[in-house]
Image 1 (cartoon, rainbow, N blue to C red):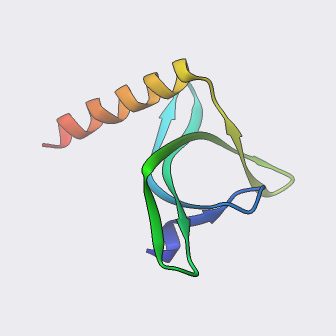
Image 2 (cartoon, one colour):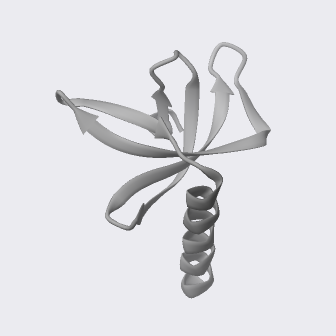
Amino acid sequence: MKDRIIELENGTMLYVLERETYQNKNYILGLKCDLKNDAIDTDNMLVLEVYTENNEIKTKSVDSDVVNNVVAALLTKFRKEK
């Protein structure tokens, strides 16, 4: 599980559920987590764009249209896997 946890620039810990490439950009779908209390916030999912800058992984918020398209792409992928 710990290999799927990343720390965002603001110190928030995020458990990465899935990765997706959409329109040549990389995105992650994740849940906020608290390692000290072994807790994952299942009420709110985040979709963030992921990129590298100066050899560091960075994330960027995206607008609701991108979120909807990335989630739709993930759902299509999951349906194909079944």
